[in-house]
Image 1 (cartoon, rainbow, N blue to C red):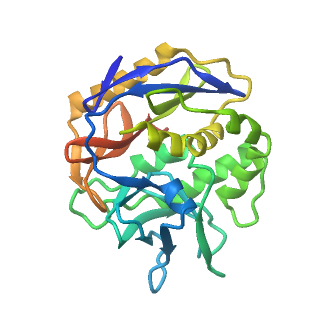
Image 2: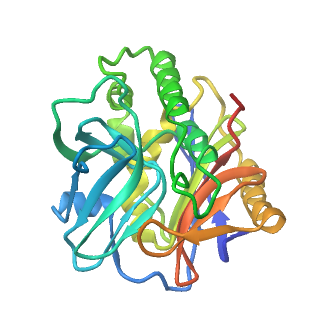
Image 3: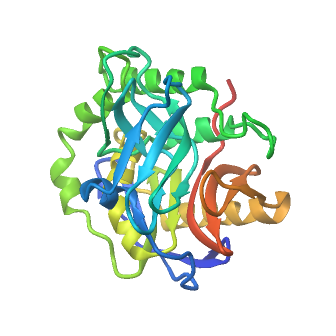
Length: 305
């Protein structure tokens, strides 16, 4: 049992998809956080529209929440279309029936024309790309570049994924890599189901933890489960053995240590709530609303450039 941002988290036995071990994380929040609709549900129900600024800007998109409650979009969630595919730089809780300008990074370097309608990718950003992007976000809590990523590094990480999986995307799009890899994953992903009380996942390959995502309620985890796993699958090492619960417990202890040793970098979020940044033995960020964790993504520190 580990305590993460005030929540007791228990690690369960993993499901294994190829070389990826997917550990369920069980826990119970205090029941705060308010009402919201998770991104996958909102897109499926036509409750969200995404558009470009006028004129378009690479690091920003406009999200219109049509729902009568808040809309949750998670860091690493990828939006396909517009002038180019982008991914969320931070977790955002968009106010109901309002437009919010959200910070994003490009994951399709070879296109900036022929805008199309924006939809949500079936696959989240891989943990390695999320880690590199998050670790490079601006540190000034009041500065204009607070949510600006190192775009060159993000493109570099996308290129590494393409080469690793022997895919040559026409527009250097990470979505093309996902689709190539997903071809052999769909059945196993369809079979993956949350366990009772599951609020998060930890993904590992061999003895290496790739990342952790924790939510405030089981329904949100269930909504994001398959797309998160599809993202982490790109980082799995072929032939790696099954991971152990102890490796995940040690990583969660490092998340807790980050809080104790460095403090929580808490500032205003993009929409509702407060953003949390981890800067110690791990990297990551999340969102807190009314003192309750809504989402946290945490990753091993990336290799320096």
